[in-house]
Length: 326
Image (cartoon, rainbow, N blue to C red; front, side, top):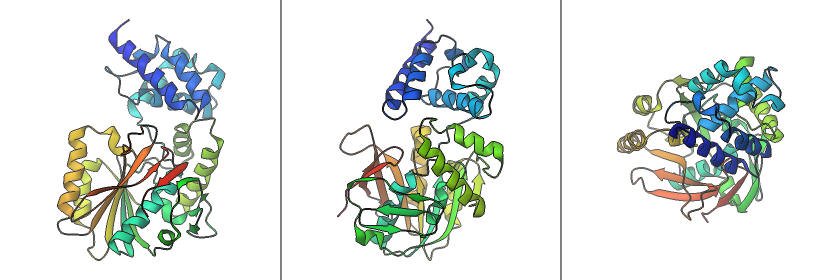
């Protein structure tokens, strides 16, 4: 068996383990695809780590469009080979998981608390369809309080393993400006765009579809501006044009993990340079400091000192948070 097929098999086997307990349907499908010799030919050589997620999304798109049923997903490798090969080559993974806003909100409030800033301008790196840029329009429930408009279409809640303090939830903030940067944004005002976005959701997680529908409706009412292009290239100019009478909060969830280290370093250097002349904060997902590879570490950096503080650990999709800051 060629090396690239060995590699792709290992990737699908790994993804099956990642899906286990979260999506039994995808766990089983990944195990079947790992043993299918046709799968390797769909991908670049060597295949990138997200290859299984791209193929699963392509298959899901075919199901949502009514071209196949899930019982024909493996057969679709042959019957829809051309479509799937183009899909995995041209579509990047864009989950736009709005439940992540529930784990992000305390981080934004913590930044405001630490800086005493009441006015925020926010920039999301890798904003997909912009649904997470709508976080100020959603309602949030935690054990010690709520945040956001009571009549919001979308209300988010989850499991708290470390309680988010009531005092933090009462931190006053106003989001004055929000902007996204996305190299290939999805237009959810277009039905095909909404279908594409849904294809990245794991199909046996019905609650995610319900949240997505509510977030799409909210975004259609108040769409945020999204700048089309490369985030590494566009971020410096965007920061240079920020007003200096508020705090600029840049954030990302997993977007930088798709970039090579030198490009991630360029983002950090850009933020450090901007922090020399304006108040800038960075909220980002990363490895948990305790070594747990099954969750995110939620990190905050605030310039001018720019020191990283891990304020929480959280589920990859935002279903639970372990708040670490008193």
